[in-house]
Length: 94
Image 1 (cartoon, rainbow, N blue to C red):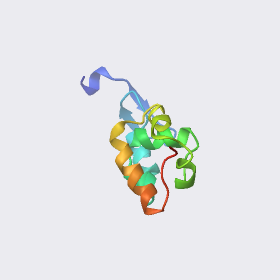
Image 2 (cartoon, rainbow, N blue to C red):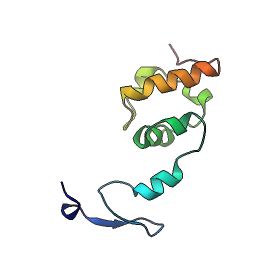
Image 3 (cartoon, helix red, strand yellow):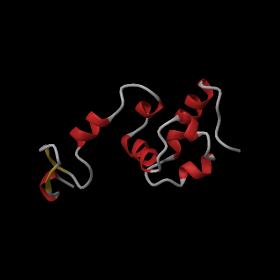
């Protein structure tokens, strides 16, 4: 699909873009500089944020299967999440 087939959108910050989802400029600005959320793709990060999972302690209260049920979360993110949990001495709920 070419840009001309998509709708021109303007985000709340005034950025214009051709896309059917969130503004890519704002999405890049929202990306954390460090921490476990910074290594995830935007959809995976939003999936956790939309489910109020913003700390590794909160993440450890879920099973891997539960995390994969979040809209936007894919199996490719699990190794990154496992590693982040292990570095803090945590793990997913069995």
